[in-house]
Structures are given as structure tokens and as C-alpha cells.
Image (cartoon, rainbow, N blue to C red):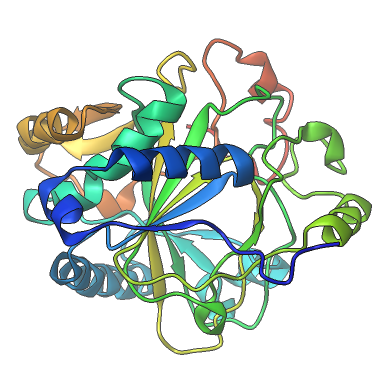
Length: 323
């Protein structure tokens, strides 16, 4: 029988850990254990709230720019209406954070504690190949249960999503539905190869074993999720936009091919972020003149360049977005 008290593991960092960039041995042990068991773990008190509030305020301004047509808008649809009507129907807006030096705070964009946990799982110098956000607008709709891995992929951890909560999140403002312990499933449970959705019959069988959760997480928390884990975007009936910064890490051996676009002037700062957290950022640089991060193209090609055939098999699917 499912446990009535089922919940994700929450590890609260001390102020000393947060401010000093350290992580106790016990916290590292518990985080890695939770990840391999559930495919998900929460680091609470991971980022100073003043830094969070400052970034959230700035990103909300950019949200309004995107809604006004200033930039490339990509919606991860909660339903077909959003795919057709975009912001008018609400939904998840995939928004790039401000790629300017004053906003790229190391504690947020290269968090040492999260990087320590992720490198303990994926191997040394995990690589950032995706830097955007899940910006949830007002909507009463929800996504179908799905996994971000829509193609044939390894059966062990190779990619991790790190979300930074820019506000308190819960069922009332669209906290993601999570199906803990589902990370070790493959594409055979999809109705069609290339579609992210899980077959309804499989979902209902899993519900009997371990139903989904809708956790409450505090502002300044970092969510560490196996990219294979089942989840679903939920509705946000409020008028308050909910932003989860999203950073996807990959194992170095996996060789994802996506690149994060930066202006040339940030080359040294990006290098300093890499050194700060012992990570690698798969960066490509463009001339500052004319660079606009809000024009960054969206891609959900999370496959490996070592096996291009797995993406070629699904490239025809409408929702598959290449580099």
C-alpha cells in the first residue's frame, strides 16, 4: 500500500554551508541516496533570499517582454490550446535568464552544493547544456504525465535537471506533479517513440504502488531531478507568475551536443563560474553587438552526439525540437 506520509527527501543546508559553499558528509550521503532511490531530492536554504528576490524581479520584467512579442517564445504546452494560442491560453513559458554579468550570481548559476551532489552522481565536471526556466503563467490546465526522455537512452543516470525556486512553490501556484521512483523506466512505456507521454494504463498501475506528489518547496531551494523521472506540469490559478530556473547537467562521457549562447564579453565570467563549482558550461560565444538572450532558440534534443540515430528516429515528431 502507498504510504500516506510519502514525501521527497528535503535536506536543509545550514547558513554556514550556504554562505561558505560547503556540504557536510552526511548531507552529501543523504542527497545521493535520495536521488538513486527517488530520482529527486530537495536542497533547502541553498541560495540567499536577497539574491533570489533580485533575480525573480528581473526575470518577471523579461516575462512581460516575451508576452509582448519581444523575443522568441517557446511554450511547453499544458494542452493543445496553449500550443495553438501561446500566452493567451496560459501555460509553461521556457524563458532564458538574463545572460549579463551582474545577474549570473555564482550561488544561483554555479551552486557549489548542488554541483557536489551532481558530480558525485554523474562524475567529475558535469556539463551544463541547457539554461532556461520553467515560467508558469495563469492557467487551470495541466500536462499529461511524461518524461523528458522521449528517445532511446541509457538505463542509468546520465542527465540531471537542477531547478532553483525563485518563489515559494506549492499546489496553489503550480508545483510540478512528481512520480518518485519512476526514473528507471524506458521508452517502451510511451504510446509512440518520440512522444514524451507515459501510457495511461502504465500510469494507473504506478498510481496503485506509489501515487504522485505535489510537494511544497521554499523559495531559495534547489530541486535535483533525474531527467528520466515522470512528472507533469500543473495549473497555476493565481495571477502570480511562478518561475523555476532550469539548469540541465549531463555526464561528460554522455556528450550532449546542445550549446548555451553567451555574448563574448561574458567569456571570463563563464570561466569563473566553471572554476567556482568545478563544472563545465557548454558555451558558445557571439559578438555583443546585437546579442539578445531573449532570442535564444529552444531545443529539447537531450540525446548524445555519439548516437545520433536515436534522435533521427524521432526527429519527425512535431514536439521534438532540434538544436
